[in-house]
View 1 (tube, rainbow, N blue to C red):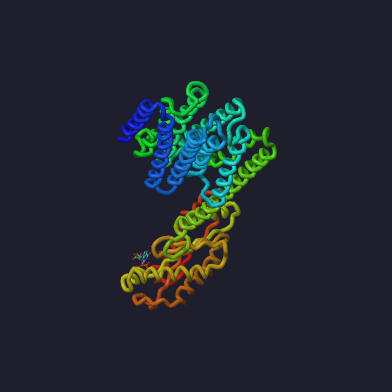
View 2 (view 1 turned 90 degrees about the vertical axis):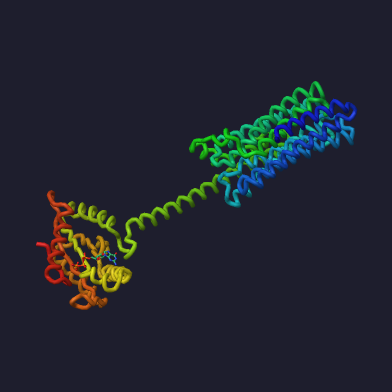
Length: 488
Ligand SMILES: Nc1nc2c(ncn2[C@@H]2O[C@H](COP(=O)(O)OP(=O)(O)OP(=O)(O)O)[C@@H](O)[C@H]2O)c(=O)[nH]1
């Protein structure tokens, strides 16, 4: 439907030029102003549909198109009401040039790394400076009344060529590296538009305006309608399949995401360098601004990267903590026990010092659960863990929940006698909290502890230490519970 309307638009444009030869200029201007206005309206509409981040890009596209429309209106005013005869009046040329600034800003900022306010502020300052430098460069070749010579008019045409080529490359790179469909749609439309516009403008500026038809009102004007109408058609519909199917490589996406904010600084630098010959101090100021803008942006990017790394490191530490901690009791879990045992065993092997292991089991815990319920059982385990943790004194000792109602304590550099002392203290500590247990002979919660200690040799393993402590624990249970037994 939009395609048919666009064809109708062009046909009507042609028919009116042919039917009204005396008013061809006015008739043609009406179409040349309407076409970019329609494109701006369709960009705004798409922005409203797309929502947030790309909306900002669509609004910038609309602003670009409006600036271009103003350029055409300015040309209309001069041609129809001021009897202009110069091809390159400054005001009109400037508006055409400024049209590229919002698109450049969109290329630099949409979906890019510039999410902080300061970064966006720097981008905005650079974009405005870019506009001002364009302005200065433009008025070094022309005045409000027009270019002083054919050479100056030609220079302005080249400036358009450079700007248009730059916009094609910039939008195409963003299209190729857009990972989100909405961003891809935005830059897909902008790439198609800037390409067609660059071709149309180059043909019109170099061939039509210079040689065959210097004034508006010829059939050549239809060429100018085309890019804007294509913009309307593409922005009106949902993204076509070819755009949906693009699948950029992660490396390219990252490169462009990080690099695109630098585009503005580089553009300011390029225009400032061009200005150096005509307006030296302004050119130098532009170069300095570009360098400072680039530097500040890089610093801010690095600050954000370091912040992100800090958050990651913090999260990783928290995750590791979680992975090695028992949820219920807060003491290290079985995984942490295994790692610690491995580590301490190797140290003991190297130093030839004894390593002791205590296996601590809550007595008649099944009956406790049955009588008081599972939640009360959980609370009991938490309390026992707290008491055990408090009773462990050396920093190198590691208390862990071994499984179920069983805890384990690794005591590096501890012979059997010392380990027995610790076990007896733990046993007494649990008894002294006086946690009621109606089905236990003592009427309160107690623990049994099996103790083993080994000086590791070539043919012993940590598993042997665990098995010895386990046998001792079994003995403690068999001998009446609430007691410590040593492995023989
Ligand atoms: N509430 C609670 N109970 C648990 C948890 N883990 C294991 N248990 C229970 O602990 C009980 C252990 O029972 P048993 O292995 O028969 O040992 P016991 O009843 O303590 O008997 P003895 O060890 O011979 O004194 C089982 O009923 C398990 O369901 C836990 O995280 N919370």
